[in-house]
Amino acid sequence: MTEALSRRRFLQAAMLGIGGVAAAAVGTPIVAYLLSPFFRSPSDVWRDVGAIDSIQVGETTEISFEDPSPLAWAGQTAQASAWLRRTSDSEFVAFAVNCQHLGCPVSWLSDASLFMCPCHGGVYYADGTVAAGPPPRALRQYEVRTRAGRVELLTHGLELAPS
Amino acid sequence: MIVSSLWRWIDHRLGVSSHVVPVLEHRVPRDVNWWYVLGSATLTAFALQVVTGVALAFTYVPSPDSAHASLQFISSEATLGHIVRGIHYWGASAMVVLIAAHAVRVFLMGAFKFPRELNWLTGVGLLVLTLGMAFTGQVLRWDQDAYWSTVVMAAQTARVPVIGDLLSQLVLAGKTVGGTTLTRFYATHVFLMPALIFGLFGVHLFLVLRHGISEPPRSGHPVEPDRYEAEYEAEMQRSGVPFWPTAAWRDVVAAAAVVAVVVGLAAAVGPRVLGAPADPTNLQADPRPDWYFLWLFAILALLPANLEDWVIVGLPTVGILVLVLLPIVAPRGERSPARRPWAVASIGVVGLAIGALIWEGQQAPWSPVLPPPQLAASTLAGLDGQAAQGAHAFEAHACSACHTIDGVGGHRGPDLSDIGARLTTAEMASRILNGAGNMPAFADSLTPEEVNALLAFLETRGGSASPSGGGG
Image (cartoon, one colour):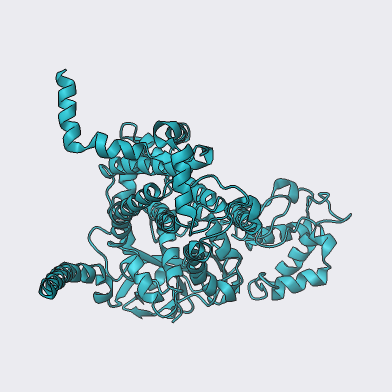
């Protein structure tokens, strides 16, 4: 009787073990594949966003550029945009378009010198600091440089969390 | 003759008479009523979603460069495609409404109590999955609302402590919305969540059969786990009626009504109009979720900033926890809503809150009106000199994005139609230059002349001095 029981137990354990190994063999690649965004994080790249003289000193304008990891079928979503301001002959600042509250796109209202968000009423001053509404911090900025008469911007991801 | 012997052959192999008919004819309480149709009505809506979803998948292209165009083709060119999409759109609303109503009915009638705790818990899973389907479905439209909803979703996920950043990357399939984002939502919407719904629904239905349909609650007849099952069984033997067809006719009528309403709305109103295609470089967006998430949209706008992280993470956690713990904490006792005032009150409070928040979300008074509207002609009439310049400055500096005058403008800030009667010139000047509360400071962006002109204009508003007689 005890022998029969231990035989039964052995079979149960063996079947569970075989099933577990099989599930792991199939599951490991699937889980790793689904988590692949963690493993192939694109590095930030400099993108040309236009000629220096395409924008007047003091002007703030929307620029668009290709995001750091465009895929062939991404279409328009491979693009990203930013608010670029020329602060002097050779200096630029670029603000992310994403409201730091929850990521909606802020608009620049030049006469009011404010960035306004259409979602939950976030408002930012011209320097990107919070003027009103729920945003917990200032607008993100991009690194900008000028080379050979062109303006270049260092791309980055959405950066929605506090740094 | 040959037909009946063929049927006998099939019936013996399939076991229809021996296994299926007894299940269909299982006894249910004699006094089940119209409140009991909400579960099968939800199932009907789900069935509509499955058949129209499969049909849509014949044409929809889940690729970011084609999804919007393929939906436009479905909506305007494919034969009766707008009806199919319309059924899927209204069916989603029907399913959300019906599963919520079903959950409320079960809660108010105490049908989650012993021995039906797992009926409730599988139902909670189905409720969460239904909301998940609603969200992932609206993203598949891949219009501007969909694009920015995805970003907002990722931003909320990023608020989770410690692992927030990783979770938001999992939502977007990367650090930006890109080539692999839409397919993530697509696979979740058409494979993963439906598979889970089918599985959980199977368990839910099995449990309904195993424990029987709960009898309508009677005051003074509390659930006693020691006795309940024996009493229920005895009562079914004594007075129960067969589910099919004595009780089921109401379910059939309700199912037909769901189909009629959803198909009727699809034909008469059609699907939600597609917005402009998803485009990260098109910042002229006014993102709004579908109505079933407007309450969340409203909460996120109205919350004090220091509570936000707690609510974004805590509200869904606590909500699900309450639903999960409910049958474990209260498996016994009174079922009748007449004896459970707190249960009735909590539904009233939650229902009112969600209703009011959806209403607020629809109005969105906190959103500036972009681009800022021009003042009404009647507002400008009769203004001259400095006041006219001030009205021009009011428009130019986007004041109307947040302030209404004579019914034109946003509602983010106070209505200024009669501001001249409410504030002194010095008070207005202080608010304009230094800001106040949610009013930005304009000292750096207005010239002294513009400030004086604005003040001259605002002084004309309200009181007996108003040339246009006020308007507020």
